[in-house]
Length: 400
Ligand SMILES: *Cc1c(COP(=O)(O)O)cnc(C)c1O
Image (cartoon, rainbow, N blue to C red; front, side):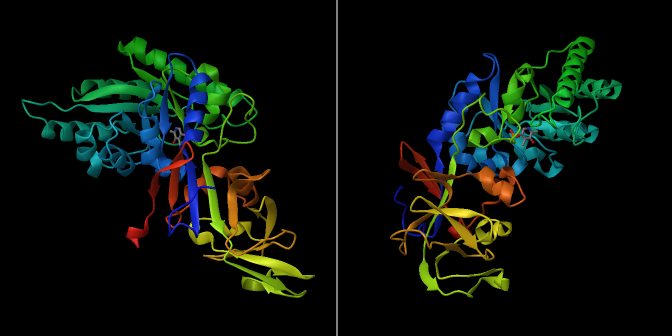
């Protein structure tokens, strides 16, 4: 276990940057030679920390750039010195247009009013000495039912309109897969075909060549080589987590990046008939030893894991007893030899030969691994390691 600084004993997430680089390299070896990676760093890199992950990957030759969900997420990366392309995947509200154009962030477009507004902001910023350009990726809805133009005559008309603005430069065209993580392949194969046909139609009928066409998310990268095209958008697999249980885990090797650790703050013996935590949902039926761990749903550790999940202490699985509180939880350490206050508690990660994964907790909490990772909150300091040394630490203590 790495030694963390004072203030981080209560709880911290270790972010293993070597694991993230390993995952990136394995993604690269599983895609075509002329396909590049758009690394998806939205929601602070799925709770892992967007800036350190961006710095880790920025100089990789096969890294095209980074994708974010919001204008603010893109600006955080730019303002921290990241110079590779940045793409906002969602709708961007007009109040952010000026800032993003000035910082050379690319937009996802699919609404006509965006075009006029973007072009106008761009003209206003430009002078005879310097003409700004707006870079856009056009989103196509091929079966997600979310944002995106339809792959139809209307869609062609939209692209034609985009081309009429000298201020706007079409950098990409993309779609998103709705079921690539499921066993049944028919829906995804249809989405891929619709997208490729529509892209061909645009290029032929409108006489343009779109530089970056992209389809795949993580599940698409693992399962659909034919969807590689110019870029793939790698999200969850960068962090060593699986898009679902239905993708084939033999096709790519992944190492989980995040582990979560705390310490026992109190140990006590209890007789039979003792009620544990709010509501007394656990009552002992024998003599037991219980430990209090200072982690709760205030950290984003789901309350729905109450009476269900386990943690690791001295290499052994210990069951959570009673309801998880906002700041603390109790575990059964009855069978743990030599257990002591201040012992390390691993809530996610490896201890000895035992391992607790984000997937395991996602599943038993009735959520899933993506949501678990994103919900690890401000109260968890992040410790970034490379070669088992601490490279950066980040906490949010100043915000309080
Ligand atoms: C979040 C997102 C991704 C990444 O998805 P993963 O399953 O995490 O790889 C890719 N593309 C779009 C449009 C997204 O919103």
